[in-house]
Length: 400
Ligand code: NCD
Ligand code: ZN
Ligand code: ZN
Image 1 (tube, rainbow, N blue to C red):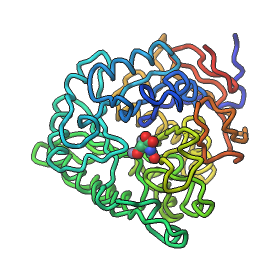
Image 2: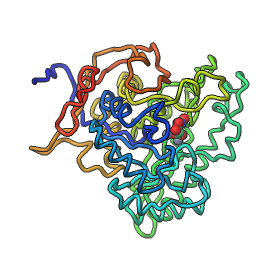
Image 3: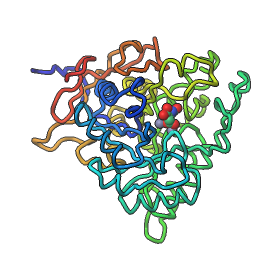
């Protein structure tokens, strides 16, 4: 079959460093099969499945299960992320080595949804991960500064009567961990950067001189931003619709501007979705009772086009860098994120830059429906995704 690519842009298949696939444990909201379908439709050829499943992916059995199931589904490479601490409890380091040596070959470790906040545990995690050639991906939030918090601490939250979540809760941990990672000489990745101050901390940390072993912060640090933090602000909270509740919270317009600039400059390396499906009963409820998180896989490219391409901050070459090349480098995936060698099976996505489409939750492949973009018209669309030389999605349909 011939694919007509007239007017389309070819990019390397997207790599998502941050996806919640909810299997095992919450298959009522997403499964590895439905999440892989959403990923393929969104232009992804590799995703990293976060560890906050039930049971938690803190051991070889669970990570191998996720990895095998991903291979069976076969729409995208599903790389399990291993938990840093047992049960995400933060008290005891998990057996990172057995997860690394398992069939899943885990290289990214994260307690996402929870911050590894004990400095000694964090230091040991960085040392252990360094020995394994791994990366610690930190969900940056000082939990003692966010107790009871419901929204970004600022004017909007004050007006709406929602307890504030201060920017410093994120910025203080990012500063600490950049210093710790450089001290230990270990790779650190910061998840879902959400404030202008965090971008400043990263800019500062990247410029620090090399340590005695010659390890530069530039080589050790990386960071991601979500599509929603590039587009949405806390002004949306005025509706009290919990679809806008997310962790970290939607921030202000000046944070959004700073995040876009930092991504364009390379201070933030890449875009990661933090695709977080939730059941209807956990979103169609009061703000305070709702779970944080929003869908992201099928809208990411369009949000990046709207916020970075249409604003002139990135060209399509830059989109390839932030959606594919940099995440593949960060995760150490040799067959993703780059042009092909002759004869190599392609990981490729064809994008229509001129298309516009309207988001409808019921048309998305995810089981859950918690998209904040419902009814929004967005630019640019994934037309075809090719995974290992096979078409996995074409014109909005999964090819399995
Ligand atoms: C995530 C989830 O639902 O698992 N929620 C969220 O708001 N982002 C956890 C996380 O990434 O913090
Ligand atoms: Zn998180
Ligand atoms: Zn997450």
